[in-house]
Image (cartoon, rainbow, N blue to C red):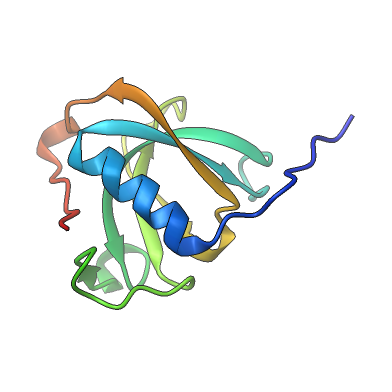
Length: 116
């Protein structure tokens, strides 16, 4: 049986939920499509930053100050990923987001870079 996401949220609404979670050091759940390594579905993520591109090529963006578009990248740690690195999500591909209320402590000294 395939689960269908009924309403796709506006990317600005999604960013607001992610930023709110980051400011309170709380994880968020995002609904993301299938990738090469994971199936489509909800993922609980620790929010860390926004960037123009993946990896070191990406310039970090400031939420509330910089213009952010659906093509930019959201960097977060996926709770059940069984690895020790941030994952990169294209903001425009995130279909929904919701708060979890689950607190987190930044890993390995990573900085939570959301402002505003």
